[in-house]
Image (cartoon, rainbow, N blue to C red; front, side, top):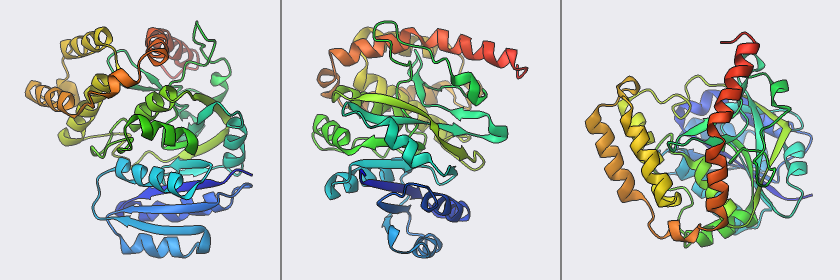
Length: 337
């Protein structure tokens, strides 16, 4: 069986849910080789909880809480360095079902698969997300959000390749092949794949860009299910001006890193036409975010990930309106809207 490093990235307030998460992880029909508890902030209660699960759990800490991405980068480093076949990532506010890991591994059996999208369920068994789509203004769109699981049977397909129109997994419950992550690190010259830019930092689509640019594909598993608790998640519901501006910075930085010039200009122009005061940001905040986003973008990557990746990006963006319209129709038919 392939070896799997399971990364549980936590900080102090997660102590109340961490025990339940680790209990579900270690009760799966297929066990990970190792569970790495990465503590952003060195919380003693988290260390004690991890120790109660014995040798399958290994605890490590970061000196400060820089958000999920700092822990994710540490997990990637450990998975590559120690030679695991796969890295599993999941928010500790989610719990995997009994067969999550076996289903995800089955979906990733082909050599050309570099990431596996899994199904996240929220309240009342409604879909929280089934991976992410890219919006035409650089935003992430959680596919299937609010729908019933059975509504995901007929997935929209890309017109050119016939592949499902889901760009990347949500890293709050995903599998990444270590060979694909290692190839992606080569593209970034062994720098962090997703830089610690705080919370709600759009790490999911960055891994989608880099893994695709490394020649790997995304696979989907509706059988790998986790149930996700949304309460208390700053990444799911950023609710302060600081978190919202950080989201803006990262969205723009990713557009500058990966999008071709014409797409980039159009995305930013269209986005800034809208009145974003409803999101808690003033016009000056948006200008600051755009300036910082441009400064943070890695200028060498736009040339590195050209060619096929640009064609795939265009196809995904061109389907965005259709995806949103289909979701609205399904929600209307089910009586939600």
